[in-house]
Length: 318
Image (tube, rainbow, N blue to C red; front, side, top):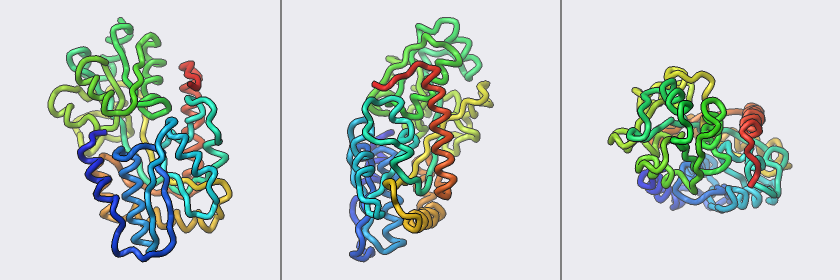
């Protein structure tokens, strides 16, 4: 993600609201560094929740270990509602790509609410790739797969899943190039070091509009509001190729039902507020809300689907 908008939004949210009473402290752990989508979205919801509940909600970044360090801290926390985890879908599949994860992403956590989701966008370097849609891209790459490469922003992420699914469907010999973060990966696709990538639209939109990248499709059921001229993957010639980023709030195992219901309720209020919806749209993200039961069902379905992709692709924990 581009630092400009994300960092500005994050800095605006660092300061606690003066209108919030000095009451109960709730810590939201983000297991990634400041400035990215996960961090910015978490801060938006923490600030809004603090205002709604008249409590002190803070965000604490505990990055490292592909998200496992901060996540493990929440798994070991007391289940009293004072320490929660804000994470993307990658949370559920970390054991598939990282060795020796000290917790079970599903069994050791209580799903509270899924609150936001975002499409991904299929981008290519226009000097390395002639294709104008996914049908043409599949034909071009399958004819000579070793001439092409696919960047990913990290193991176990939605862009990684998209890359593996494309490789399975089109060309198993295409090279997948891992990066530590979205920024360097997008930069190298634009610079011609790598051929293509699946990425959050916000990270690539300026380069698409400037002609340094070509957007072939959004990997979502519907077109993206920020680039309405870009078709969906199905419109671009590739059915059943949908990969979304979604974000949710989890508690440690044993969190009482009444606490889950209370926090879920305030997440609903936050997601339905006009200011949260507007600020998320600026980030290329849509505010949503789900019950804990619906979130649990989503998390399990994502785990099962993504497990099959990684198994078929031969991806093993590293």
